[in-house]
Image 1 (tube, rainbow, N blue to C red):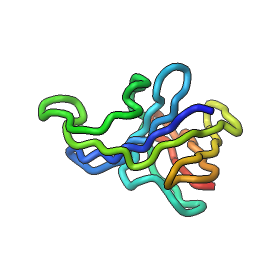
Image 2: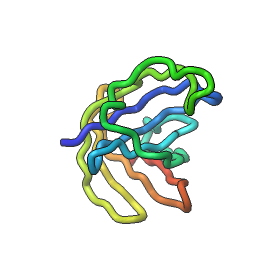
Image 3: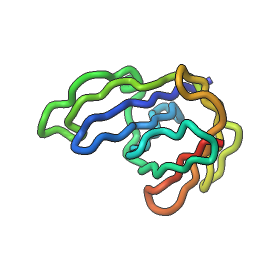
Image 4: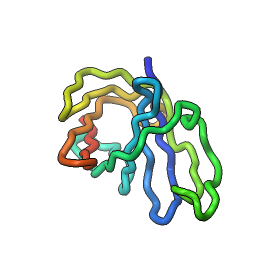
Length: 118
């Protein structure tokens, strides 16, 4: 099973970084309002650049003047399994300490996705 992490990121604006281990990198989305915990809740997720796999354990402070400056803490982590995948939609099961169950990422346009708890 592949790994996932959610990092709480106190940068210029508080958001949560949702990352899935896939194809040798961490596919990453910034989720401004946090990861949905209730069924059918939809949250905007902005796809950002892939991160290196070793970033899955990162906690600390990114210095001022650098991209993403601010404090990063691990909010949740665990494993996930893809149930189905297409260009427009990824359905997966999360097994973390806080996040458990099925979720979907639905591509809207450009870098905009919806993260939905199923």
